[in-house]
Image 1 (cartoon, rainbow, N blue to C red):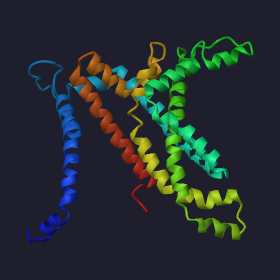
Image 2: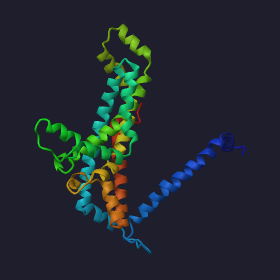
Image 3: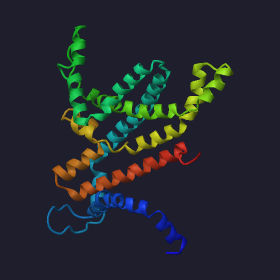
Image 4: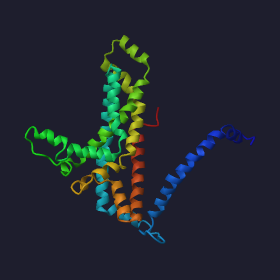
Length: 294
């Protein structure tokens, strides 16, 4: 133990010991299930007994399945719209909050906007039903102008917009909070220097705040890119026969194929493709925004 490595292990042994439970958790609940799913994706669909290897048969079936291809399109459309709108709305909301002088009002608005993020998707879905149902708040408001009730939840034209809007409403406060924390960490001397130079508030936002937020912007973009293909909870809560064709996503396809139809090999192949697609999108986004550059 007199080697440099041995001395380092001895010096920091408490930290290595603390890391052991974390490593065990990820091995048991992340890496082992991933490995099992990867193996199952090359096996036949059998719940009991031996599962003979079938090569790439499951993958060939999945990429030719019209339901899978529709799920890819839906996932990309919903995921990319979510990514753009989450980013823009949360950034704009954070900038507006930063301009509020009254601290109590500012904190109250921030708390109200953050609360939906604490709710489960089941609760959010229930709220959305109360708002957009035939007897919901929106239709009650429209009735004041003599407008016929609109069945938003069953009209395909509103399927994707409602899902996207629901996600924005739930998550905007969370991402705005990340931007707000970054704004609070900007040095006050920069504002003082800008005021001395006669810079307006709008100029301060453009020249000080936005450039200072670039590292946070990159982090949030990467986090959002990870979720482009992984929408499930909100889809599962809101899907119905009328809107299924337009909002059924990849993870819902995997769930229905594997859990409901017991096609474990096919579902594992679909899940593996989702993971590969997520890695690809995240990698391309990191490259595009220069995430690893200073």
